[in-house]
Amino acid sequence: MALATRAAAHVIDNAPRYLSRVSSCRSHAHLQQRRRQRPVSACSPRFPRARRPRFEHKTWRELELTFQRGTMPDLEDLVGWEFRGINLLVVGLPIAQVFGIKKFMKGFFRGEDGRVMGYNCPIEQNVLDGRWNAKPTDSAPKRFGFYEVYPVDATARDNEYLHAALLDYGKGGNKAYDPTRGLRDYLVQIDPANPDLLLGKAYYAVGPGRIGGLNFFVLERHRRGLTDYASR
Image (tube, rainbow, N blue to C red):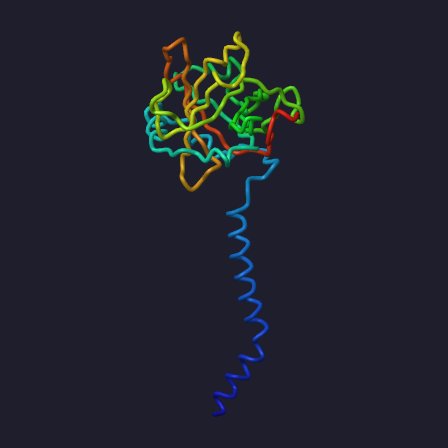
């Protein structure tokens, strides 16, 4: 009886400490869950260093295999966001650096007619793990190379990858003399559990023909962009 009484007294005396520990554990678990659910920062400044070598040093075959294993991204989840991108030209020459297109940014918005649309922004060509600074200014970037985004149609001309979304610059309203009109980008989500990292593959339309597999590119969710373009 005396032993039971002392044990009960110990529990009562230490109850606040035990409850504090339980509360702390629950709070930590809740915080971790919120962190997993929290959207990417609207002003995320740097491209994660660990992810760049993951793709920068892959062979063309490895990138193709990664692309084929990808899944269709949720188009609704793209709207209103801008993604920082890196072009991956696996040819052994720094072509993207020479032409100033190694780093770029793509944004997605809802058109007046309800279509999911997108645009490109030029980026300052600093180090790959440096800041993504849009040109001419980060607060008022140039937007060009517009495209419509939709699931690939198996019956259409551009049907190379049926599990991908198509970024069709021919339906983006670009001028007839704009060379971006010929671009056709296929886009997949690399990991079904991670909607913030995407892999693309570019083609170019010349009449009914297609110049295929120009390059791969990786996109990572960067910041809030335009929800719609028409009202701006």
